[in-house]
Length: 610
Image (cartoon, rainbow, N blue to C red; front, side, top):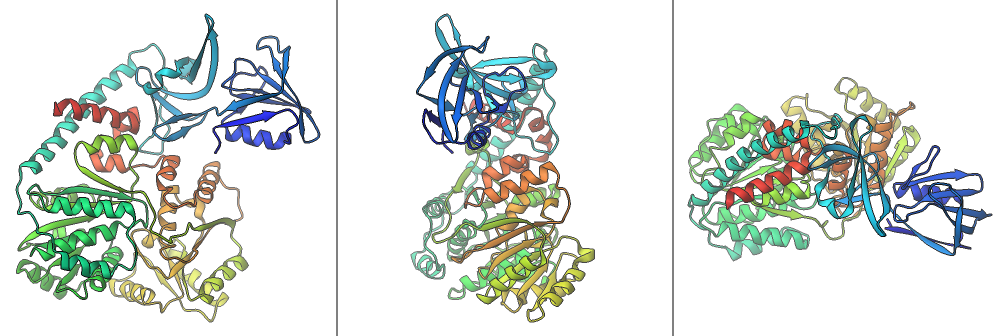
């Protein structure tokens, strides 16, 4: 969006167009008296008080043309002069790379949580000063000079409830701030202890195997993005050091985190070490297992899996093979943490979406992490400030760019229409593709399958959900992966990690019941090839809540690849910080907001390092 709006006399504009632009620019409608950052629609005239000017303006129209621009006196509203052109700046703030609009929560480091009201320009002793106006409890108002903007940060909660506003001039905020900082010092000390322990631990540096690298690159089938190349180089550098690797790979849905992990696995096994991949779901375990078998088919690598799909006999054999060194790579769910598993020579641990594991699982993980290389993959967006704070404690690689040839997903938000759904499914199957049809109520999912079979009698339609038996679910997912099923009627079991390039149409029933981040994650299950993918988010014939409308509107607008970070901010559902630092920090983050908490953490880390 443009940073400013230039208006001239005799320029073509309708009042309606300008009103929409002003709303997009963060301007609000004035009731009686107009103030900075507001507008009034008065018949054929439009009154605007630009945040970058000392006085309001009146725009008079003749048809669809700006006929006159008049400068008005602030107090009396009388005409001061006519001008030929003007420029109107946005009524918003840019903090940590995100746009703060009027009504958004904001934190002042000295005064606490308030609500951003507007920007304004004031003339004092002949000098023009820009202010940021913040509203506090009991209609208290704080004017912050624009040159002190670094004292402000966006408030991002780690839950769904709204924060309590602070009152100006009390000690409440100072107490909250100091308590949080004391707790943050403890967190930073604990993190630095772990960091220091890993720094003094020793392992045998790996020797880079060029032949195996060439072999695995052949089976990739794509060209690495610049970010992937950089991340892979960083991992190879880590693997060739005596200090154990502790690297976080943070990237949007479908941006190639798995490929980065595969390169690390290749070098670990080439050097005679075993590797373990830990995943949060059975379905994802199966997906990784099949992918790795395919990718390593031409290399002497033995792969096993450990999940609820295993029989008792298969589990016993896998555990014995791991212990005796006959398995090179073990793909497992959290089941591995609670089994009597002993690796003969573990050298690399890859954890996919660590935040989805419970506290007890993480405690068990620590026994693996002492002196082996650790690589954590996550699609949870990390706010820039937290990223900076954590960068002092662990190595982080970020994947910003989409794979070459990948297209953004065409997204439609529509009222459920059987004919539209039928046509969308047929359009996909006619080009040889497959469809996810998401219905997230297990009690009625069988009825939906029957309904679709009647509607589309020539197609193969089956169901998959988490309450099915192991053999039943494995059978359906294997058939779907092999392309033998046209439409998979499923629950949110598909949310994590399924990567099927032939599935490029997604239909979600009652999408207004889901959170925005979850819908974004689900949409990331399609569009994994160079084909144009289509997502249909449907809702029933009922009045949607205001929040549901906002969520679906945001999803429809954010179709570009790599918008997961901004989407998560809009939904205020970033739990990445809480999960990366530990659940016990939830209350502190809630009290001051995730952004300020991250700044305090960075301050604490820097202080302790000195």
